[in-house]
Image 1: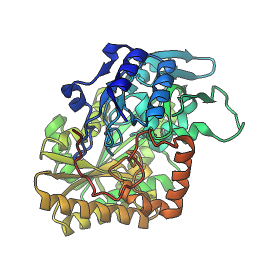
Image 2 (image 1 turned 180 degrees about the horizontal axis):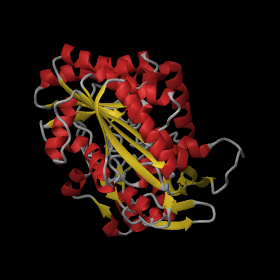
Image 3 (image 1 turned 180 degrees about the vertical axis):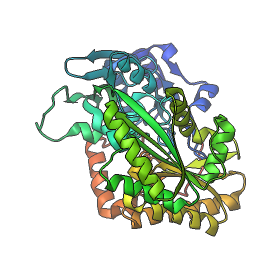
Length: 471
């Protein structure tokens, strides 16, 4: 447990100025971007290097003090909320790009590096780091690793896991291990690298990351297809992919989302249609032109009422930026915005979109739907008010039914946000009790004292979306 002696020992490790325990500091790190989850930590600790983290881990393991690693707090599944108290670990001092290796096409970075900053730095050298979560202006690479973050380019390029080549990790007992590296091939033992990516900080602390880079695409084009029928828009997604075209981005926005995003961005998005597809392709100029032309044909054949190709890079960037702002735009409408990410096979997008609309009507709640249609990752987003307990109950019922429908269609309860504390009660829908049991055994092997981000991923038989506090 956390005591004054433990606090003093932490100060001895990282320096007094890097341990914050005022009420204001604890309140600031008591929540993340997830509505309705809040709990005070005992302290906030900012280590300067891997060795300090190892000493912190040993100390906390001996005293059974929970540790919650945290990046920028953009988590949407209560994954960085310290629901069992303990310490929140920040990486503000570990925010350096250590190396860009142009010979091996890799970048080695500390966990506190901002995602967009990393992307920008490698592009200066004509290189490309594809994962682009909507939070990339704020999020950190360490958080992306813990959540296996996706993004708009996930359809063509995959997610964070697909670019992680090597990790340095501190285990709960303080041991420091290295998994993977700059090698194109490495099958020496279990693939610990992939195990830690997406583990939500429940197995260890990632302190150094080696990422794969690609050559920067020669060019890209963006287009917008407008639909009077949501089902037609969803069917177009399947038709594009069945024609063996894999666009960089294939995004879906329904009419309620369009209206809000246009009001927020003022770039001339159409708001009198039922849905739009935002499509981007990159590569060499000839291939891009060919694919854009073919996809425009497919959109029209599938009842798009209008197809427009962006006339300039600036116009294309405005369209993409508007899509990335969807959550911010929606969050202005009501006091509470709950963003989810039910994911289904691409062929089931139309059925899932229709199911979400039916479920929203059934429970009389406002749900806007947008997301990465090309990889089946939809974001049904509910606009509500946490103070209205009766409505919040209906929201819970609606989302539970949405998750059940996603799994029924061969999908999952989360494609990129993680399980955290918010979705722990739904994990059995995807994995079953045997699957959860296997995961618990892995957790116990690495973290027998359960100090690493406790209360996340595995349900605790507690009410959903509760606000918890600690005196």
